[in-house]
Length: 617
Image (tube, rainbow, N blue to C red):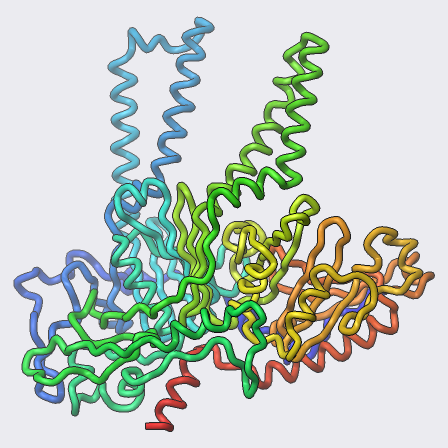
């Protein structure tokens, strides 16, 4: 039996139904021409505002004005093609060199000692061609930001424009590959709800510029109004009316509370999450000629745009403060990999191959198995490199994650963007009570494993702290007891409804672990005997629901229940429930999801805070 996903529109996540960044092909007339740009001498440096205050011009040097669209298009750093394409170029040279030297050894190839001049000229021509294409690609790449979207133009022969709506922003990543770290450049990756390759990548930029751009995008996505020029903080200026005034007097939201409820946080993580929202206010002086007074105070906990010297024609975005929460020591990360099943399988496999090779005195068996061994070793090193130096923090912008050994990544997941959370524990971690926490975020998909990790390895208290970063209110006064039963409990309990005894014929080892529990804000699903797993799905993030019942399940009167989430490492499901319990759960969860969506906060999470501040003032 398979029940189709419910058609109730309330169960459709608005963050997923919105179209992905659209690919448009603008005409040649719409593209700004470099020849049309005025010279530096001809560009105005001052302009009079309606209030008579003189402000710095909004079009800086190096920015391309697009009067038709009303956007200021900016280019990425000139060395962007080199940072992105150096690996491909090196790979081509390695392949060519390998083929040439291999031919020389066999006597059939090119003798580089006789034709070294021709080979050198070929390499030079290849490099010049690559540089020429890269320069042309750089000139045809530009980006712009308005209050609603981020726009990116690319393409030489086939022009493409992508628009990512800020209200559908799921995460903002600041990536620095190895070469980018050496030259001080970074790439901004905007994850939006959509299909494959829906991310918008802006880069490379100088690290300071990339961080400034990230702050600006997060401020606009949060709903903090933009003040377009340096005169925005001056009394009497039109930009200071309405929303512009509100943006200068906000307070950071308390991310640890839900509507009318106080969070039950047994780990003490609530203090870590709200401290960032109670930082001291800071005052930014207006950098405007003739402005004698400073602008209204802006709390440091409020992400927003403040007046100052415009950067690329825009206001300066204040980075919201953060409070460090968790930090992973390298030793624990290494030890957790050593105690993992992939490492054990790798060691056992290598030992077996060595034993067979010694016993048979035939090394061809070892050579045949070498790719598999390298693949396993590469997986372990990739996990170590990607999760090295892992740190998490909380801020009004959302959850901030930093990690990476060779490639540094700084992630920001805005509030309410996590679709599902999974805490799981391998069998070899049980004596240390270690847990790994992973999440589903729309846009990351199943290929970005390191991006979907909320905690690589940590104790139970640390894992619950990571859970509270994205779900601060479980909607239950005894949240710790519920989670302890979910993590290590077995059989029916006070909170959990589990599979019936007859399910042991289908799952003899873990049938007592299969079960579910419901709290005021989330659905908890647990499973697994040897590898324990607990999945938490916020009610408002329920996309659709389903029941599966095979022939043996139908004969035993059991069914499997699943919550359909966005692509990612978390698959919320529980098997072999009593079919009456499963049918009742699917109906009740659909109703809970509908009610939760009706009371869900705005996509622009700072809007409600600014509204409260406006009412109080």
